[in-house]
Image (tube, rainbow, N blue to C red; front, side):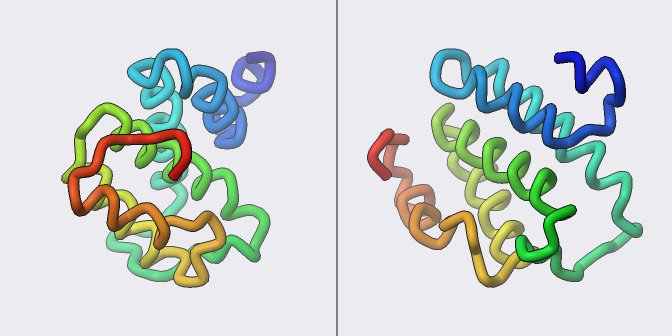
Length: 117
């Protein structure tokens, strides 16, 4: 929490706080991930449609927030929203270092969240 107090723009702090609540309170976790995404988007030019490769370390906090946000949406059975987040992630980072390509089909098929996916 001290990282957030020091600088609210620390996307990794938002991602880690989301991770802290993910298992027990996804409704709270999603808020942290969403704030991280919104802050990160402020750094992107309007209409940005480029890539944010995982291989560039500064992109990772934003991609972590997106991943956590998408997983929370899925866990909360908000399938259409989760699908959009995961599709955007695949566009932003085509090499898909986070493995979204392995779970997006479960979301598209409206399969409920399971820990072992």
